Image 1 (cartoon, rainbow, N blue to C red):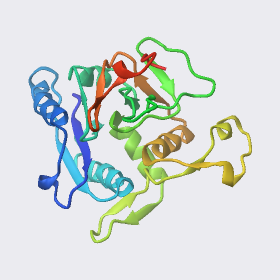
Image 2 (cartoon, rainbow, N blue to C red):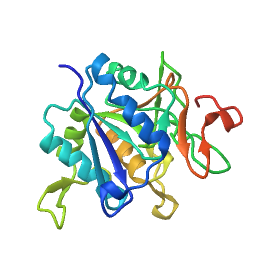
Image 3 (cartoon, rainbow, N blue to C red):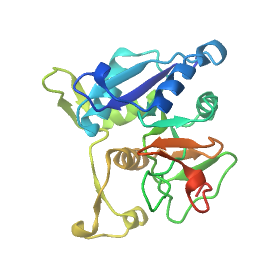
Image 4 (cartoon, helix red, strand yellow):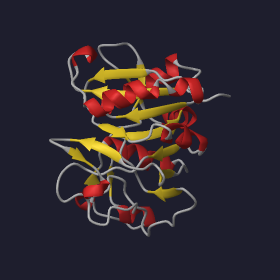
Length: 236
């Protein structure tokens, strides 16, 4: 089956046409459409205005419900962009269910957004297995979304009648729990929606990776934040 990508961008606006996005994101989106001619990837953009947990849940549910032809979802935030859009078909070709392009936060001290396993995994070819990735530039297979959707609690997406699975709902967790250590509740952190998704996927037996050859991913804040500004800015 030829790859068919849905580009999912949660937005911050009462209406998606009034949303403010970075110019880097907008220019990259225009370039991605050209991949249709060379990579046979058909992109779609789905945008939502609600809190980020329900936004991502709604995206996943809508793709599974309305886009049966979709093979992947590219979770692409409106403040991220890459130098080379060819990394998108490259990430598809890896055949992984959850793979992100590594990018940094956008404040000091700078750090990678992805979380290493404990102990860290070794780089295998062009990919590194990690504990979690941010969803600013991450590719997931629809097969993985469907598996997670089937496993998680569903709720009604009021005021809409749609049934939505809570695959991005926040979870409490501590890394030591991955090693079977009992950690008091008050010592656990409340994970963001992207890390919670990754934890759920790993609990189902899945794996999370980053693509080490993705190059520079830019993260817009007051300026362009990226790994070239970070001491030792290498994948790790």
